[in-house]
Length: 151
Length: 151
Image (cartoon, rainbow over all chains, first blue to last red; front, top):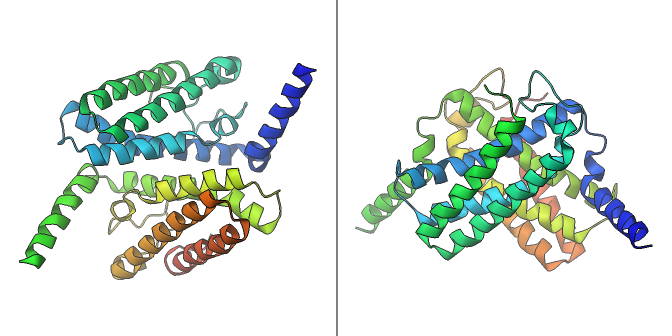
């Protein structure tokens, strides 16, 4: 009974969050995930430059970028990384489809760590922001090493 | 004196927000703006489907999407729409460079109206959400009619 209910709830949630994407064409799914990842990178990049000292640390800019990256990471990446959407236009590797649980757990790690970065950045503690930025970097690198083709 | 200070402040803000993009290659600027616009569209699309009644209205999903669209719209679109980045890979029209003030004022309208949509959506008033969504739609259409090539 509990399992049955859990399945119903899961089905309802999936319907709400992915209904619009269920019929997404592979090329649209690829563009969607690439856009989300690029927007995250456009926000992470300047934070990385501040952490490395390439540009002056600005806690306000850092917090804004962290909030934007966290927000965008909650989009339907599971749906955009649909099985079978390997393509010459995409660096996503087919290992994603073979290790779906691991891949989705890494997406959750990304969201959790970006949300934490955004929270910490709102507090303005520069050292804590830099530490947590390092954690985000590990999650990015870990997943890219496993599931993204080298350029 | 006031003018001088305003100029200094504006210069400092510009340095902080666009330093990382000042040296952006045209192809990177094009990808950046297309990614931002696509992420906005990926969030606006499901809201539009709810407003039209194509899918059931879900105030929580609507509010989440509105917040994400508002957040992403604050990115450095002025820098991504750099003068001279007209391209076969982009529908941005060169009229943008000739009417820079009008174009940037439309970007501000977009941000203002998305921020307002996000605020209203957080309140959960369905009729107000639909009204304000209409205002956002007008801003999108107005700018696309002027500055985006038809497909």
